[in-house]
Image 1 (cartoon, rainbow, N blue to C red):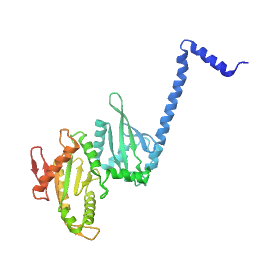
Image 2: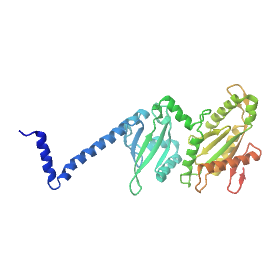
Image 3: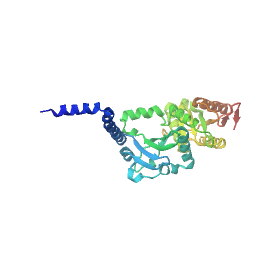
Image 4: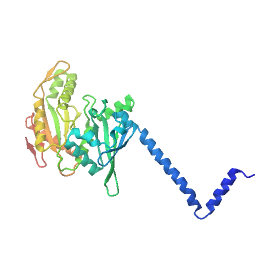
Length: 332
């Protein structure tokens, strides 16, 4: 009696000895491997800890994973064929929408944040990245929207991530975050998107430290951060570089708009600061402004230009602002 395994082995050998036998035996295996890959990709997509949405090039939802539902409260059935640009971007204004679209068109991606008010009963502000999937002609076929779930990190690790990008005293973005933002601004197309950097330095901060002590100085920096943050648009960035130096990255502001913002900032310091420790402090501010040039420069050079304009403001008597110009520093 023949062994079934021996018969099977003999049959496979006979099949492979026929013309095209190896090719025929490989075809089913190739199909199995292809199916396994598809199932694996589907499992990775569904079980990824980050929220992922796939949309067409217009932004209409095709598919989303379970993490996206957990993070936002929206199910795939609720969002199917709805436009995420309308849902998440339109409320922030058409200018913001155009900025995102241009970034995707020219660089293939955009990154920012999703406001908690656009979620369902969720208070987290999730980082969002949109990546374009393009064909050989560089035409966008689909968009992948990824929400990074930093809330799932252990508390200590989350704190390390936060400290790497934020100033521990004021909670504002630090130099690292600012430079990344400036690089993003500089890499965008210049037309129709004028922007500026405002370098802010406090007038008389050393005297506050000498008179009231460093604890009061820290309280003052926190109060300044809170006052300025409350008066800036959500798409602008206020960062602290250290000491008494702050920088504001203004999105989509003309030369004249930047001057108005600088004047407004200086006016904010005409009102005294009532601090948590009971001290009342009067302090001033000077501002240097560097508009984004049409030529390509780096973030360090842009910040240096704003810094040079700031020192010109200091030399002019403080409590004023100055623009950087390539050949001179222009009076306000």
